[in-house]
Image (cartoon, rainbow, N blue to C red; front, side, top):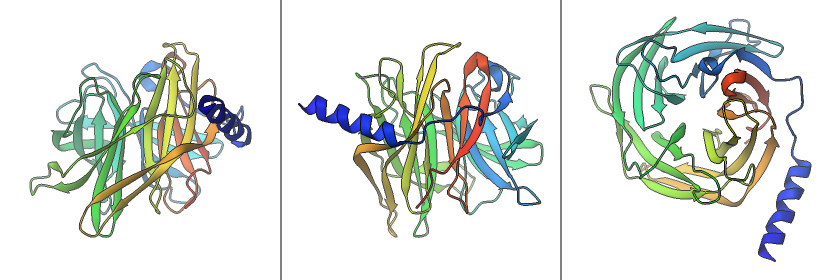
Length: 301
């Protein structure tokens, strides 16, 4: 009976969710080396009609591309490479702007190394790097989000999970920086999270995280059957985060995540709520089929 009730709720949710319509994804990469594994808002374009965002690529070889700038308008996109100056990462999966520090970002690899970057024009310079705290056995990270509330910073990240037997583990911690620039993490809390969609052996319960201005946690989930697909994805409202004036981080996950949209044939690995907008910019790493972006109105307060 519990299974039947849960399935009924899921089908009702998916029936009313805005599914990804064909023809609105815009291609920004043509092969497995040019997908979108993470996105960070950089600025509005000079005329205000579009946005510049930074996109990380999950390449693993020395000298391969790690970072690009995408200029996104509805109907057209431009992509330009950004040179990486400093120790090279392996398998970048997420990037996030540091609140209150223009031009500075944190980027995360799948194994849990956080790079602090300064980006100016066509160059990203490594300031420092540090491992995440409390890395669990088998953790594989694809998501990272920064939260600024009550004058304090916090960070959220997640082991992506794998199918029915391994839910995602959502981690959260206060964040500060050492005088020399290194990220420093406070007490870590953990929550288990299971995606409502997609499900099955290939499901990654959390493939990225973004947080709205009011503290809603928006996550993507994805299924990957191999480098040529098929792929499947969803974006869901997972719960809320609150950072107190004392810096304490509290995560409240929804008992039943609200599926905001489903996106067959794409593997969403990037969700970025755009400031001053209800739009989320979504990015995909569709492996041999390349990378795509689109916006959806998922970031209402």
